Amino acid sequence: LLGPVRERLQAECFARKAAGTAAKRDVDVARARKEELRADLVARQTDRAAAERAAFHAESCAQAASEALTRAELQSAVAAAAVMHKEAELAQLDECAHVMAEHVNKLEQFKNQAFEAKQSLAQLQRELDHARQKTSAAAAETEMHRKN
Image 1 (cartoon, helix red, strand yellow):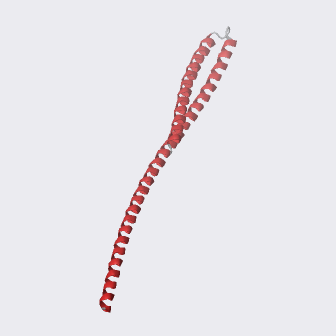
Image 2 (image 1 turned 180 degrees about the horizontal axis):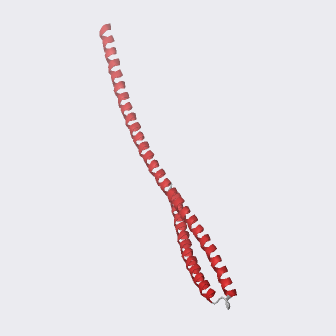
């Protein structure tokens, strides 16, 4: 009953994990790019007179890389939170499945008990009918003896 929901949640969890992995990879790429651009900035500042415009450009790129890193880290955090949420949903689903299985087992037990009680009742009914027949026969025989 909960299998399709579980499968969907597992697929979403897998997709979130993949997105988290991609976001982490983007963080690493952005971090490496930032470091590369920072190194370029330092190299260009040593020859300031000839490369003032290039240094300004490198600084802009470093800022953009820093902002990209911040965005990538945020996306990574969001992806990680989504994965944790899906994992929590899976845990809840597993718990629900366990509770439902327990209820199904209890229902089976109650059905068995009801069946056994019904059989016992039928047996007692047969015994009572037999006892009534014996009593009726005995009463009729006693009546016959009294009339004779």
